[in-house]
Length: 313
Ligand SMILES: O=P(O)(O)OC[C@H]1O[C@@H](O)[C@H](O)[C@@H](O)[C@@H]1O
Image (cartoon, rainbow, N blue to C red; front, side, top):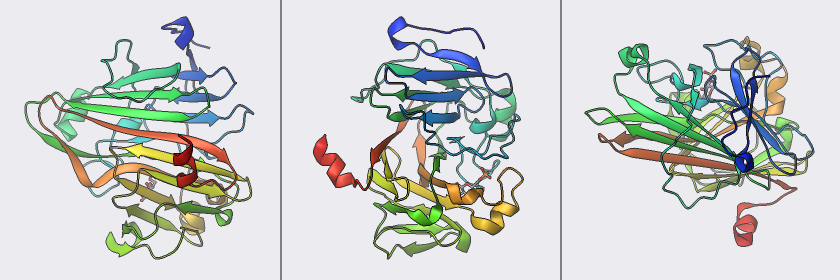
């Protein structure tokens, strides 16, 4: 157990140690829902509902060893999503040590974020600047609402003298009953880049996306809300996003899982990555400019779709 870094008794969060002795923040709302965020990578490592059920997947073979990000939760992919740019796969932010931001600048958004939140900050080290010579301040707010919704707001500011571009993704491992029981709604008729076919562009034909083999796609210009329906668990994840046009859908399936040291052979059945992202058109910031990208996860019972949910707000 680490020191308690409580900023305000009403907005309390607790600081404990994660598996490596690195500080992690625990948010717990009045109903008992909770989220954990490690300072290693700013990675959300757990999100539980008020019955204590874990909603994010973490591999049983996850390697909890910095500097690598662990397989599960929500690694932050910045300043590059994927492996086709000039730096390491998914960027360096997920492997770095973040700090708690005690005095974050005001957030220019109408979004209400409940009472339970923490602000984290990442600045590049001298070493990072050798590989990616663009200075930035990356502020991440992770919050849990009184309904147990989890939201992540990222703000990246260019504090460099020159413009630069980056890509980004919330690499979200959802916990699912079984991959054959799950479908995604909201991606119908969209174009996507297929990472399994050298990023060739295709158009989604099906009514909803279901899974029978490996999938690694970047869906382009997606609606602000998609739903992941889990029939067996009778629950639906609703994912809302802002500032993030793309959605990556990834499941490694059997063969690739077997080749991954930090994923059990059959574990692909119980995970599905659905990542709100900005990939096809990188974000460009002029000096002093700031970008905001937000995602919110809600879990609702049974087969709820986004239209139903929108009409309730
Ligand atoms: O093993 P990593 O670096 O965490 O990446 C896992 C996967 O992440 C996905 O988002 C990518 O689309 C895949 O191509 C990649 O294999």
